[in-house]
Length: 396
Figure: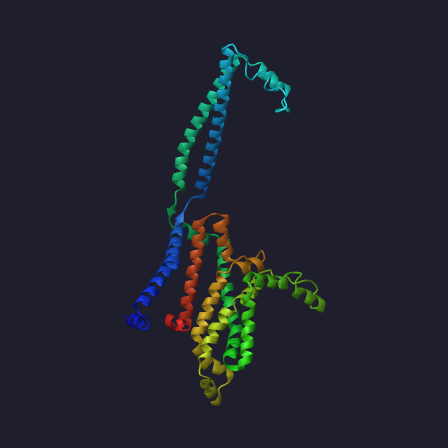
């Protein structure tokens, strides 16, 4: 309550109400409601066999209606001919099967059949068509009864079937755990690469050099992520720059298949999300008083102890934020594994995409997506516990 009162004193009642209303609408409309809908969808299961049977029955019924329409049209035409013959007029269809300018492909048999029709033959044909219509309508009635049972079986039901499918599906379960493990590895690699860079930018680099290095980190991100990923594809492909260089130097005898496994994906993700690790660590290290580092150095502490006892404890919130952002981006990435991954490096996001778009199974896709979301939340909580920080520390 005190924080709200301070907010009101600083920004005024109108601005405070506007900010809180905007944040509330954004939180509910963009975060809470979509996640609740996804959770509800993930708990909904429809029997795919029953749904397929419903579609088949409907297709058969549609075909029967088409047959009835054609038969009724033929009956009307035959009745017109029969009426004309009984009235003593010429058969309207006589000679209609002969070849004409409008029907140059008519066969002689068609003309002969049209000319040879008698009232008895027309009545027999009408009765045959009426029998077919009655048979089709009886089949439609049977289809309707079967359709009702199939639709009842295909009705959505609530349960954990979609989550059980992830547990029982060996392939998708393996892809899920591989994605989580690879995302943790990407996060670790980014941390190892970015911590020295962040420390150098914050405490060691001269002003102009730090600005140039910062610009060098930012400029590549002015290019779309997909284009940057395709650049790595050209570098790591079988006929790419790296293989051509290694072959020219004689280091290898044949091209290395970098895209087999997840190596190329991890490299591409490390490059794609490196800024999300550098900047949080840089921001926290930049607030560290340099005199503390100098004091530790004067007391004879080696560099590794200075970082372990002074810099890293101070930078824990930035490290936690960097790890959280990098992990979540890596686990939720779709373009990078799709472009750089081979046939054996499918990412879990690709499985989710296939469930939604190719399989049209929104319940299963929602269950997979919600499982990934819960895993990311657990990772956030683990990072907060590991680095002993809270949400307020992260917000700073």
